[in-house]
Image 1 (cartoon, rainbow, N blue to C red):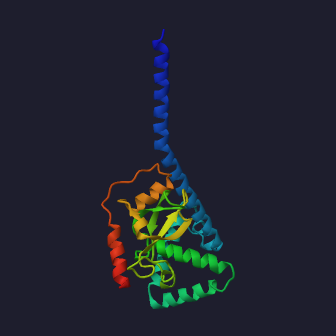
Image 2: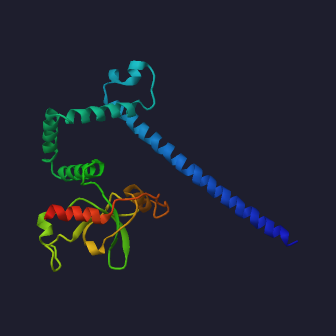
Image 3: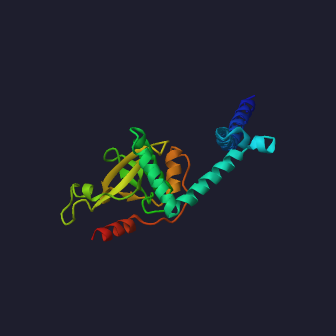
Length: 236
């Protein structure tokens, strides 16, 4: 009689195992489809700001799902094309100045603009190398990213070690929060306390956002000492 409970336990474990595997397959698919549908629905609602006679439904006689996304992409592309020339830059500068004069709004607008330019641009101000830093205290380590540079005004006030100029031994690090990496801490850490990780920026962000459940792929990464050497060559 004893083999029956054992077989029942095996079936139960197998059932749980395969159910979990099925959930892991379908969950990202369902969430992705839901997110895309949600974005398309929002974009389609943006069309309602157009005059009724200019809306796609009035022109074609029927509703076209996803037309809002297409229109949004065209508008974004034309905006980028316009701001690539001198006239467009002047218009953008006037627009920025206009938003910069509105109390409260100017802080939000300028903050979002600077962050988006840093994250989306291909310049050296974007995130560079994933690192481990002691934060928020010694012997507690967290993932951070080398980001931007330390202004001279701040660098001159940082404590320095014998044989080095003030602040030149420090590396600016952005420490993201989990699971929302858009919030975090910008800290300046002595290079002796910064340990590089052989991991891409994308993999490190995925690891942080997933609470450590998504393991990184293996890629050869640029070394931290190369970035630090370049930083010191610029200061000398």
